[in-house]
Amino acid sequence: MSVNIRTTGSAFGSERDMSERLVGVRVVITGAASGMGRAFAAGFAREGASVGVMDRDLSGAESVAEEIRGAGGMALALGADVTSRAEVASGLDHFISEFSGLDVMFNVAGLNVPMHLLDVTEENWRTIMDVNALGTLIGIQEAAKRMIPQAVGKIVNTSSIAGRQGYPSFAPYCASKFAVNALTQAAARALASHNITCNAFAPGVVATPLWEKLDADLMAIGDASRPGQAMEDFSADILRGRPAQPEDLLGTALFLASSDSDYLTGQVIMADGGMVLV
Image 1 (cartoon, one colour):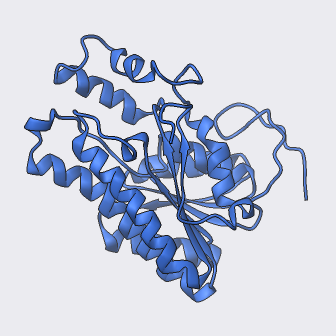
Image 2: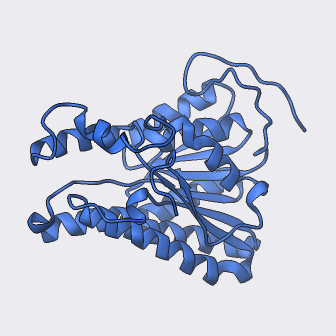
């Protein structure tokens, strides 16, 4: 079924005609209180999905869910730190009790705290790896446990251009995103017999709160001398000529969440505007 929806006003409305390709699809997105996760939650809801807005910032998640519901969509706020298996499991169970199942899991939550390679500490390493790598593993595992009984599901992970090459001030972050790629392939192989696919997408420079903090952090360690320089420097080689907005990634996310990607598994889709050509 295709209908025309014309709404305006916020990220939760769009001038585009929407196809409602996710009608009946139940999706949980981690890190959905801001940035890419928020854009995905809004876009999926416009396409007819029931959306679990999972974030450790519960008030932020509730705000996103309220906006989605105010625009006529279906959403539930879920408070969870992705490094806590118990919190992720509880959040997923709450979502399933509300919507009677889980079809798609998007592991979006992530962080980066840059340090020069020789300055990287054990604390810095563990903090980044726990959120980006362990958090993705927990998201894969807990979603899969709930998808296996229904013999169908999609798991989508967030990689990065930093999962394709190393950057000297982002060593733990790069390692964590290489790990996401490996987890994506391992999960694709482990879950194929259960009719569950696992893929990832790899953004480049995206104008989100993560990059705003990164800009300040890079100034603090001497890698940039003025606000905005870090993003400008990293964006210089983008073939599309500009950093991404979160909504620029929505088409890729919709593809991975919908039946259009049913035959795809174990893949990392570069969605970086042409920064890394592989």
